[in-house]
Length: 162
Image (cartoon, rainbow, N blue to C red; front, side):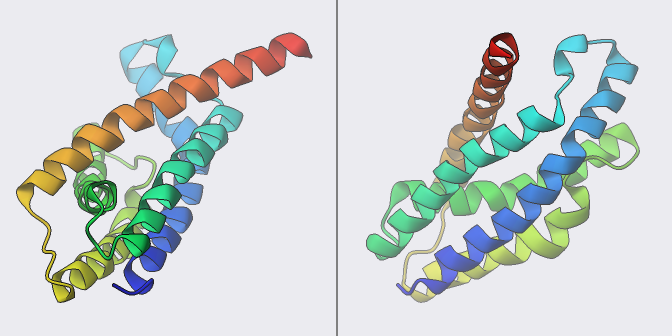
């Protein structure tokens, strides 16, 4: 396996998630307005911290992909999970009947990065399976929630120390 698939995937994720980080607080504000659930509020700082934390996971997975010649379960899960994540953005925008964070870059940025990684896995004889998608969702969804929780905690501790 070359470094191209993991590098393309990570680069796509960085572009996609940096833009997502800036748009996510506004999407959460709209969701709070619709639902009245104040706990969904996210500050711009919290969003950036959470993206940085998730970036560590994605970077580690991509590094493992290079070092393991496509055999790494975490890399395969992240490729399949990020590919599936594109669908969640489209679904969220459809459900909210409007723009949601990440939908503008999910198709033109994240999907091509994930597909490049998928094609490289196929060339290496390591096609992704449905199990990889299940593992990706099982890894990335809780990881995103943990990253948001840790980011909220860091923001609160930082505010308390100020």
